[in-house]
Length: 294
Image (cartoon, rainbow, N blue to C red; front, side, top):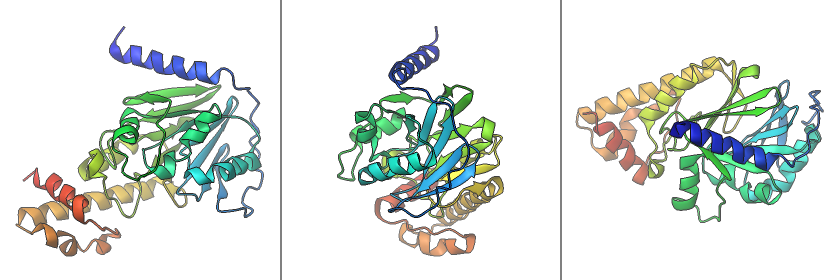
């Protein structure tokens, strides 16, 4: 058996054992009018069986299945109880698994409480490493209970959930979550009008564009970002084009000898619809990355 096959077997076995004790309830897909105001979180219907719970640091995606509920991203730890309340307002079924799309606290702050309540948390292996080693937020964050490398398929009855890692982009541990039956994809932090890679965790602006290129090979018509409303495929394509323009202009300026401290001001990124605030170590990382190709 290959190393990849062994890793896949271990991952699935770990997850299946952990999920075995959770009761299964048939899915109820009728919208429950979840948009009434309550606390700091709000819920939005996206597609049949797919909701977004916004606030508390970012979007949490709720996917219904015949074998329980799938969440993509948690929130800050203080939002845990309200998040569960919001989920129950949509459908009163057990949460089977939480998928972290990266290591940042607005997604992983609730990990400890999910695990305490017997809910498994999955992330890309580098995201776990970042939580254990590279956490600089000062918060006490908890790593996932299961990890994968490049690709992992989870099955919840008839519902398939595909976890995809396309290399270093915003971080070195980004996960894209694909729901093929709904033609929907969760891109997390890979969509932002302020696309700044986390160079402390080997992020890459060039890799970001490449990752989006891989996402666009998937068959989907709606994408859910880290915050804000769901976007269309064409909006994600347009965003990739903006990053490509950013890289092209910045690379040319560096090649022409533009000093690092003048790079951002000369880019005039507002013309491309981006809001960049590169400074300090992030600016150092950007300049170093784009200089390597010269």
